[in-house]
Length: 401
Image (tube, rainbow, N blue to C red; front, side):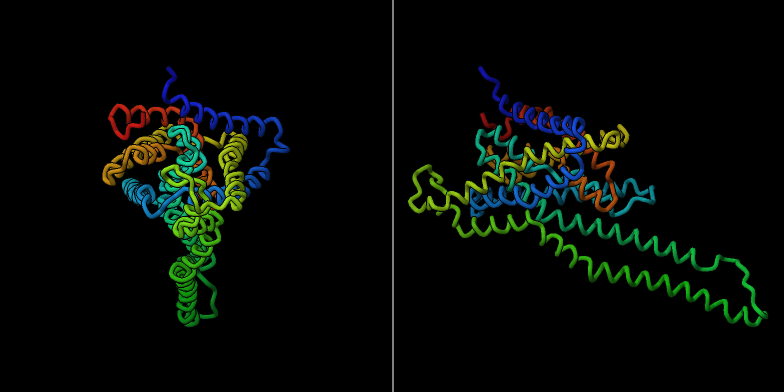
C-alpha cells in the first residue's frame, strides 16, 4: 500500500530540487544566472505571474460569500505575531540599539509566510486538487498584502526617519562649538553678549530637524505608504479577483461546472481563453520563484547564514512550532472543518519567503536574520510539513484520510 503522504513528500522534494537546480546553475554559469536574472525573474513573478494566479484563484475559484475564515484567521495570527515580536523586544531592551525596525524584522520572520510559492504546491499535494491548493494558499496570503504590508512599510519608514533624525542631530552637534571651547573676542563684553547667540543657533537647528521629523511622521509618511501599497500589482490582482468573485461573474460565467459538479448552463466557452491565460502565467509562480531563490542563495555565499546557532534556534522554534500552535488555537476557535483546518496549520508551518529579505534589504535592516530564516526554514520545510501532518493525525485533528 502506498504511503498516504507520498504525494506531499514528492511535492517537497520537487521544491528542494528546483531551489538546488537554481543554486547549481548560479554556480556553473554566474554570467547568465546573476543578480540581473534574479531581479528580472522577481519582477516577472510579482508584476505578471502572481497577479494572474491571484485573479484566477480568487475570481474563479473563491466564493467570498461563504468562505472567509482562513483570511480572518491569518489576519489575527499576524496580529498575535506582532505582539510577540514587540514583547520579545521589550524583554531584550537592555540593548539600546533595538527599536521599531527590529520589531518589523521579527514580525517578518514570524508571519511573512510563503503562502503561495510553497503553500500552493504543498496543499495541492495534500488535497490532490490544484484548485483547492490555490484556493487556500491565496486566501492565507491576502492578508499579507492587504493588512501586514502597509504596517511593515510604516515600521520600516519610521525606522529610517528615526535613523535620519539621529544622523542629523549628530551632524548638528559636530558643527556646533564644543562645550568649554574658548572663542577669541575683542573684549570680554563681546564674549558675554555673543556666546548665547551661538548656543541658540545650535538649538534652532536641532529644533528644526525635530519639527521636520514630526511633520514627516504625521503628514507625508502614510500618504507615501498608501501610494506604494496601491501601486503593487499583486494588490491590483486581489482587487480584480474580489470584483469578479463578489459580483459572482466568475462563478456564473467562467466555471464550466457548478459546485455540485453539474454542467453550468450560464458558462461562456468564448471566455475560456481568459481563464487559460491566467492559468498559464499563474503556474509559473512557484518554479520561477524557487529557481531564482536558488540563484540568490548561491550569490549570498557565506552571508546566507550569518547569525549564531542560538538565534537561529529561537527563530526556527518560533516560526515552525509556536506559530502553527497559535494557528491550531485559532482554527479550533473558528470551528473549522477538516480540510480548511489542516490547510491553515500546514500553511502556518511553512518558512518565510524571499520577499521578506528583499523588504529588509531595502531599508538596510535585518538582512542577516531574514536571509538565515529563509535559508534554514526552506531546508527544514520537508520534515516540518511531514511532522505536522503526522502530529495532526496523532491528535485526531482535522483528519483527511
